[in-house]
Each structure stands twice: as structure tokens, then as C-alpha cells.
Length: 122
Ligand code: HEC
Image (cartoon, rainbow, N blue to C red; front, side, top):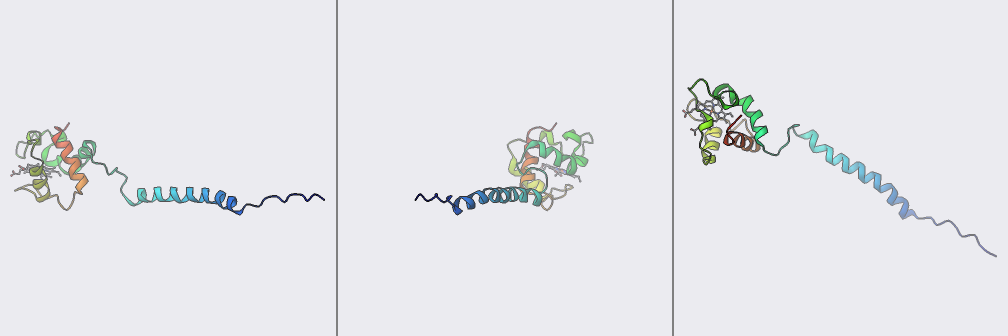
């Protein structure tokens, strides 16, 4: 007599099939989590971000787009491009009438501002 072959029951395959969507959900969840935790702005420093920061924090004294019309504050377009350390020190600690920005700016924001200022503004 011929026994009908029982249909192979493969619990492993079933498990694997269930694991794929589960892994996808987990991966998507993990990818979405940091985006919610941080600000929408990308963390990569860039002159473009620097310009936005400059406009919010620095333009009221140093002029829109670094064009300094008042003549009383430092003209940032003339800031020496090879003196990044001086830039960071003055901005973080402040200088005479310029307030310190160390508590306001994150390190990547300081870097973005330097990229903007050393790029000549605009
Ligand atoms: C309240 C007005 C004010 C604001 C806001 C301001 N600054 Fe200044 N800044 C000054 C003044 C005034 C000086 C000149 C300081 C001096 O040499 O006596 C100066 C000087 C500087 C210098 C030259 C420092 C040096 O080493 O000679 C840099 C660089 C600078 N500011 C960057 C910035 C940046 C970047 C921002 C925004 C995060 C900013 N400043 C916001 C007033 C301001």
C-alpha cells in the first residue's frame, strides 16, 4: 500500500516567514526613532546651516549676509580665513561687546558658522 506522503510541515520556514516582517518593523522603528529625538535640521555641518544660524544669532550685530553697514562691529568678511581657532575662541567665549555663544551653540553649529564665515558670507 502506498502511503500518501504527508505534507511536509516546516516550522522553521514558517518562523522565517514571520521573522521577515517583524525585522522590517523593527528596522523601520529604529530608523524612525532618532529622527524624532533630534531637531529636524541635519547634523552634518554645512555653510548653508551656518547661514541660517548666522541669520538668527549674529546678523543683528554683524549685518545681514555679513554685510556690516554700521561699521561699529567687526566686519566678518575680513576675518582671516586661516584663524579658525581664534574664531571659535572669540565666538565661544565672547569678546568685549560681543556676547559669549558657548552655551547657545552646539559644536556642529559652531563648525557650520565657521564654514559660512570662512566662505565669505553671501
Ligand atoms: C550683540 C552684538 C553681537 C552679536 C549678536 C554677535 N557679535 Fe560678534 N562681535 C560683536 C562685536 C562688538 C565684536 C568686536 C569685538 C571686539 O573686538 O571688541 C564682534 C567680533 C566678532 C568676531 C571677531 C573676534 C576676533 O577674534 O577679533 C567674530 C569672529 C564674531 N564676532 C563672530 C560672531 C558670530 C559667529 C556671531 C553669532 C553666533 C556673533 N559674532 C554675534 C558683536 C556681536
